[in-house]
Image 1 (cartoon, rainbow, N blue to C red):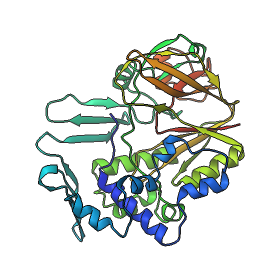
Image 2 (tube, helix red, strand yellow):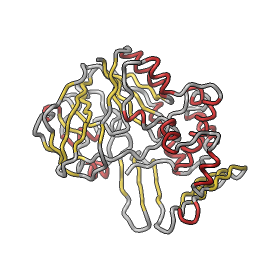
Image 3 (cartoon, rainbow, N blue to C red):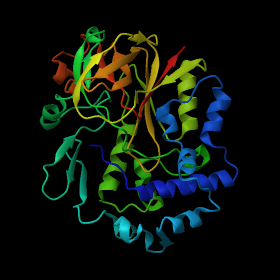
Image 4 (spheres, rainbow, N blue to C red):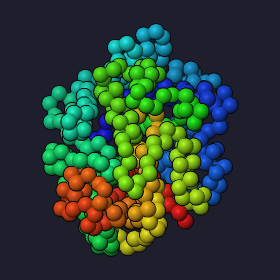
Length: 370
């Protein structure tokens, strides 16, 4: 389970994006096509474009009020913050203001999310009786170190595997779920106007009506901290706060003759055994820029470029017959990784000894040279 911000944050970021468009800013996908006219936008990126939201709800800024009324949803914005009530039948009440953020989805019990602590993990408690589920934060970052609890939980899922096992017939347990991170890109001129720094985190809280000390505040601080940490040797890292800045960073490292790929899953599945099907294909040399979507009020991607990465297209077939077009990233030099990284503990290997691979989640992308 992955912690995420309530829909109201995305409503606010959507408002900023729509206002920007009406103020003259070009949609991010237009910039993509102007720089990379022959490179298709992968699904992981299109899911983070706010214009897709507008298309889905079939509404624009001028008739938004009519749509709200039609859906029996009252939206009030004032000094007290933002209140959204989805009507008697919806049972959903969202309040954002001086009191922080409160989401109540009926009598079914509520969700508590805790981020932080010495282990830098996430404790998620759904309902009043269920046991907390410990979820690793950014296990694909090189300086990540797993706690004993995370190691126990994550060994049940093949987050990491060895490159020598990347061939037809290999069986592994995995889980591919649709992303719960619905944060959308803001146009660059809007994103650049919002502080993105631990030193100005209070300004971020104010911008998005986040209560200091709340779960959302901890998530924001954690993302900013990860983005500001020093790179390991041989890595060039950058947190892209807009699609335009991601395009600029990636093309500055790889050139414009690039391919951008992501994992594609037809439908969400539970944990099950997958078999690597025929057709494993290497799709890059050693250079790549891998971008991981962060948990933030708007779309932010942690991108890092290395010269020691091989990327593969891997067809998978689940025990239930579901097929996955997975993207696997293999790191050929792990000598600078944290020795307590989850990968080493799961695979029982030491840093710098063998290539370590992992599948990309659906909301992550990898840029490679064609």
